[in-house]
Image (cartoon, rainbow, N blue to C red; front, side):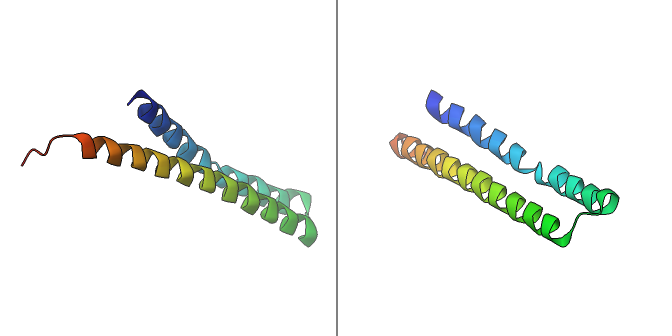
Length: 82
């Protein structure tokens, strides 16, 4: 059960980490407006952000699946209260 709680905390942290996408987009906007980034630089930055968040969301989803599986196993072993 303790491992499930730890994984649940990991999942929460991973979701919070995914919300940093907004500050990454703000940084890119700043670069576009203040530093005259070229279209290639903008495209490369967007591709990098996309790839990074693919990895982050995939990691969070795998953690979710693990936590969900643990919860299903735990609740399966509990007596039926009906």
